[in-house]
Length: 357
Ligand SMILES: NC(=O)c1ccc[n+]([C@@H]2O[C@H](COP(=O)([O-])OP(=O)(O)OC[C@H]3O[C@@H](n4cnc5c(N)ncnc54)[C@H](O)[C@@H]3O)[C@@H](O)[C@H]2O)c1
Ligand SMILES: O=C(O)C(=O)C[C@@H](O)[C@H](O)[C@H](O)COP(=O)(O)O
Ligand SMILES: [Zn+2]
Image 1 (cartoon, rainbow, N blue to C red):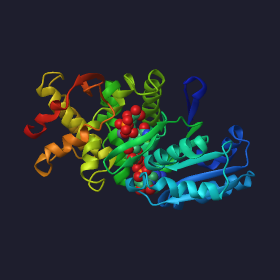
Image 2: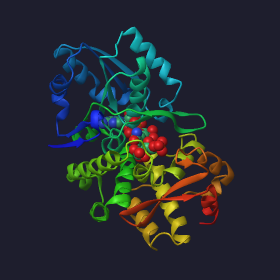
Image 3: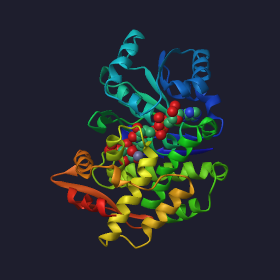
């Protein structure tokens, strides 16, 4: 069992990591919430595995519950989904002193977190992340939001959860595809902040090997994210490092209509591509892109951008919507070497060379 404290003044909270924690959730929730109603927002897959156990446990603990179960997948993290959620919360007569639980992967965490930020101008919420990606990244730090047709995460808020409950055993039901996918963000943490962690990951080849060290992996990633978010909650500088590989990744996801790459896959491709560009321009130690590429391939993640299938101008147009685009400067996240990242002012022209890689 491990506990991490995210120190953000009045928005502080703890992250609890514990095998089997799902069986004790009602007891843990009782410690922090004494109201009457709880709305659980989840997706159909996660609901089938964990929804009824949580609901029954919460009812036995005296709470009145509502389960809002949505279709799985990125298409659900859409602006149009919000009114459907609000309607159900209104029918349930959830008030602003009551509680929303996000039970699921990053799609549910981002969507439910934004519903919680906006419904009645703000209802407290907690995160119970169930995918690897959500356990290492999206459940922490309070970035919540939805996609628009023109791009990822274009509407949202900073809304910190009251608590994050992580049960690593819940990963046992996750598909191989989404286990691999979460490793895209895991590798990112090594790249931006922790060369020793990156080297440790290089020693792991299979899901079984990863699971044998899952507590170390979860703790290391959550701890890096915690420290970065404490330094820069609102994403004005240091926090941008967490966006390594994401300018290209988000554009690629949008360009392919969320149908070709899941988020972690796109991040793997984005990290390799931007590091190749950066090496070519002399900002990054030679061999760094090859090391990231080898690491990603080792765990089965894609690494090639396949520009022959992409119209560069369309991709660049999507990239200009990146939220790191400020005052005519696009902030790009580069590595000096593995474990050492920084933010550099560039223009969109930085990416022109993508076609010649
Ligand atoms: N807010 C942030 O800081 C942040 C950080 C990283 C990524 N994200 C966002 O997170 C999203 C991706 O998250 P994701 O990869 O978790 O996707 P997801 O929520 O779609 O989950 C992936 C799939 O796994 C299933 N699933 C989840 N947990 C399961 C379990 N324990 N057992 C069986 N099936 C399970 C889901 O039903 C889904 O089909 C993207 O929208 C991305 O933009 C947000
Ligand atoms: O928490 C952050 O900050 C991140 O950038 C984490 C990313 O992994 C995540 O994909 C995030 O949702 C991207 O945020 P955005 O600001 O680029 O929409
Ligand atoms: Zn991400």
